[in-house]
Image 1: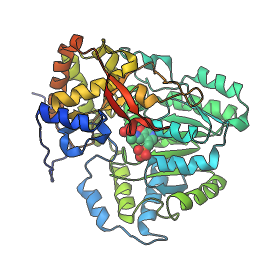
Image 2 (image 1 turned 30 degrees about the horizontal axis):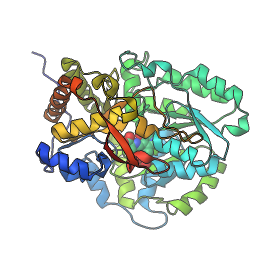
Image 3 (image 1 turned 60 degrees about the vertical axis):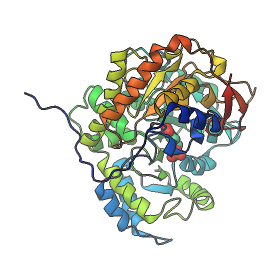
Image 4 (image 1 turned 30 degrees about the vertical axis):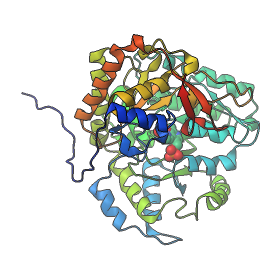
Length: 458
Ligand code: F0G
């Protein structure tokens, strides 16, 4: 008999979590103004709010932390990380920052001015925030197929090259500081971008003389999908595929809290020495001196190991198989989600799961709260709350998709936890006809409102 699959690691340290009653959760949720970001984590049983900074580090990473060099200038930890960054991504210049949005802040300060446009596939919310904060516009050129959750195509995160060319034709070169390609495409459902698409995008960028930036939070998962799904890559290692992906890029930003498997950290990196100089000043101003930016020496050391380990096939295979496992459970119960299952998360199609909640009452958020009440599982809304208001008209933007994201931390939960999540969703789905009301906003911040929003029952 063929042996079944198992994770390529065993568990050395555990952290207790506890269940609660529905009555307790009702009280806590009300106190949190129906915003799951405002819930203390001890009130959560299975936390799928994000896979960012929530992974389990390996024993090698913990060991590397003890060797962290905390020198203000020229720490060995910086050089360890610099060496890995050059080895894995091929960039000579890099600036460590405390996380991904900080890398955006530093690099975009050097690149974006008011009135600019930044086209790409779905920009992540902090990326869009850092563009719009500078009075520039993010233009989403993702393929239309990404909006059909039931369509199974291998690279649903791709940019529509024709749409992108329209934008590059329309705006003068001076108004387009760079094209931003997010790998994997988080907002569209953790969906990968093919090598062919990266190459085609890079070619178009060259034609119009615009630099290409890869937003790299989940670059290794993207490489895994290229290996598994794209012709010609089956026999290549993840590291070889990553090197090929980044051959096409001029620069990158990364939240290392995802595929770097660290609890905090990020960086931006580039080939252009002039740009590095310019961004350096902003790094010193916003983050810290060039050789630590926003990170301690021990964090940089842990990241250097994390980048090396998480660009190995077995690690990625275990992780992505767990996401697929949850997807298969949901298939069993007929619960609709963005297909195929993504790299880091399952994105429930909230409009299909709760067909009777009006869009003005925030469907995906309603599904998040229902799931929490049912089981103590915390997901996150990727819908109208996150889409925020149009910066010009201040009207609510209702995106084509209302998604409830269940992001699975790396190496943290077992498949038994996934079974609980799926069963809770089945219970909700079974009574979907009776769920007809959602929420109304009682307070919101002027930008990035979803983190701090206050809601009440509609
Ligand atoms: N880019 C992408 C594609 C992201 O998914 C994130 C963060 C960032 C940039 C910003 O990085 O959080 O380190 O400042 N995504 C997290 C998530 C928060 O839950 O998807 P950060």
